[in-house]
Amino acid sequence: MFLGTFEPNLMPGGRIALPKKIRDELLGRKLVLTVSIGDEPCIYGFSEKMWESVTTPELSKPLFSDKAGRDLRRKIFSEAERIELDGQGRCIMPERMLAFAGIKDNIVVNGNGDHFEIWSKNRWEEYRAEMIKQK
Image (cartoon, rainbow, N blue to C red; front, side, top):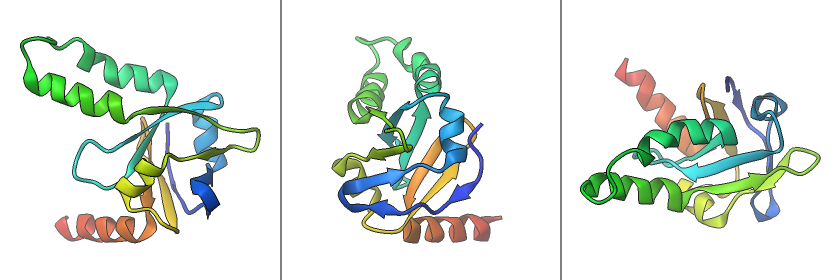
């Protein structure tokens, strides 16, 4: 289970070294990254196994008669990318995902149970403050 909040460095070229606690939950060197499907400006990260588990229900929806289902499927799968970590747990995040999340420098990686998220530190702090106010 992905837990915790971390502030790893964003290296030139969009390279990130995922925190060890996050890497340990991946159970290997491969993961799937995609952009959030909601209003949150962040990048989702999944183990390959969990990615298959959370997306399989979308594949069971009718392809020809469900436009909303087709649109969601297009968003989910066209934005996703398989990524392989190097021997030191580093990967290069796609530029389009960095742009979507507004990531330019400082980042936050947080665990969310079945996945982790990568945020611009500034956007995460704004989002978190809003969540706290709503309670």
